[in-house]
Image (cartoon, rainbow over all chains, first blue to last red; front, side):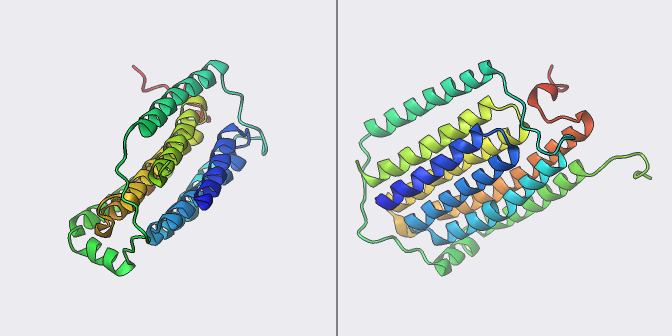
Length: 168
Length: 103
């Protein structure tokens, strides 16, 4: 329980400061910290393979893509802070998020959850997971592969430069 | 308070942090990152219900989270490509200035 509290506090601190800071690079790096905290939560809950997938995909790949996007869309000055957002927009965002948060917390605390406290962590080994992925979920795995290919090709086409001298 | 409730509180508060970030910032990359954080918070729920649910040996929550991570990676790649394309045309990535598709 104490480990969960520490993980949650660190993840919250990283996520909140990421959206409060003005420097875009700092925000992205702090969000990578928050994703690593989520991977730590997966490890705590006994889902090791998902934790490794989270580290590989988010902490490794998505963070690099985001950093490249930040560097490619930089305007002129090297360390220009993100311009101040309008106060109305910020207040509106916080009010909506606070309302949703209150609703969710009230629902969680008010519902009688039938907790099935297993004495030990439910161990689903990587071998069993592989059998599940290749057996009952093989079609979904193939569809995800096709989806990733199409999405990455589409991203390349969208982001590729369309200067007139490049096109034949 | 049961551990399941603690996990659910953790994920819902993380969701709210992402929602507040996505709604209150006007930088497109930060909005996209807020949406990613909300998606991650939803994944935490799957793991919590798998861990404390009645059938943890089935592994359904794990499979769902793996597929959700794969789809989120594709979404992030396409979204950031769109950000780069908008920046090339408008020299800015503020949301308020990328409104040419608005009716």
